Picture (tube, rainbow, N blue to C red):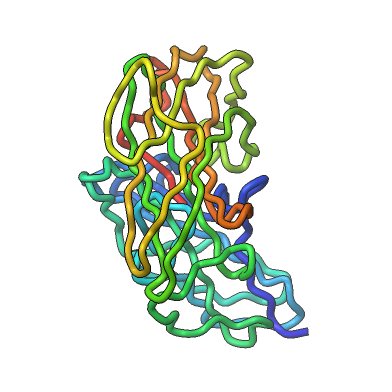
Length: 290
């Protein structure tokens, strides 16, 4: 059996990968946490070789993109690469030495992607990836996506933007819909510095989707929204979130699922925590992604 490179997907949704994480600040060996807009952050990845042959000089490319469900080359920006030699059965954590500076215009809310390219891989990817190539983690085990955002709960509605993109030669008709509740695996919580946190037993979260940015306390938006995107373009959709204060060390989950022809093709996960929580070092402008 040849080499078999894997960057593990998240569960239950692949964009919750714990094999991609961020270390905010100037020390790449510091503690993981949510990235901070406008300052240096370092990207890490975990790559596995489950095959019977070694793969030396494995390159892991890191990308960021605006929060979005399905992403293609051309809509994502490459940050840099990390390298590893992987013996059969080996796992290695790799560091991208190029610092990442999340853009302030998005408040640091970005999606992250990692792509492993290595000699002798059983299912090699095109190298380089051509423009318009769709990152599809479910179809390619060497690709993982991290689209997880930490948001401080607030009674006043917050507006967050989500991008819906179409490939250069194909228009898209998608449906965005909200999914409330659930919990995150311990490995993922650890990379968010929420190691000992539990899902909230009671959480009142009001959220809605809209095509234009607005805040209406009486009508936060739609729970399901159809979006038509011309080929080669990206369109914004706006998510309004309002939540009562959560108990200490408890979080609430909200997901935006992007579906096409009734099938989930991507999404964004929002982790709501108390605005008064001490010691978490999270702020409303910090995010993991995806």
